[in-house]
Image 1 (cartoon, rainbow, N blue to C red):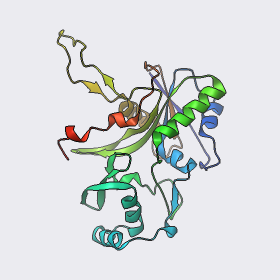
Image 2: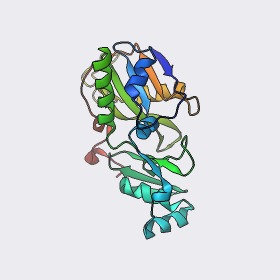
Image 3: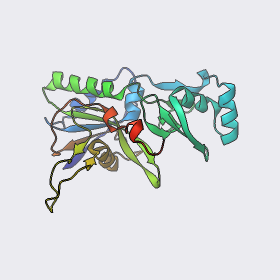
Length: 241
């Protein structure tokens, strides 16, 4: 398996065509998987917020004072969240409207100009589908798309890339019903391959290498229609709610 970087020197703007940028790299093959950092999707889709336009509520001001955090950021976090899961150490762990459990609703002030913040895409599956469709129409190359973002993990230090949007592949490789090396039937082994591919791509992307897109080549998968929602554990199966 290969992970091939696509470097982008310019700042992505709403007028940019990400599919065209990928095709212009002349690196794409039929059957590749493209992993795209959420930040450039958010920038292209206008999910960049000028903090001077945000008016914090009394609740946001109270939380901001308690955790020494900008109340305008708190206001954005609350507006992007279904519920607060935990608060502490200056961090709000929330469930976003997409169903993701993550710090600060994925709102980020890094790699953008001062005084602005990016929100997660409204629907990253649709974002991925749109790029995949354009690539197929313009090049006749059938690829899969993963949109990724960096999340922390409960009970473990450090962060890894996770898939937050997909098009063209099953995010889970389910081994249930197959045999292990001792001919025992596997019952519940399901590998979150979209997350694993996202994490692998982060090793090439980095955070300051101007590489928000990677191409994963020679990983075998079936082109299928699926949703990122398949990676979200149903509430009735979640022991930590």
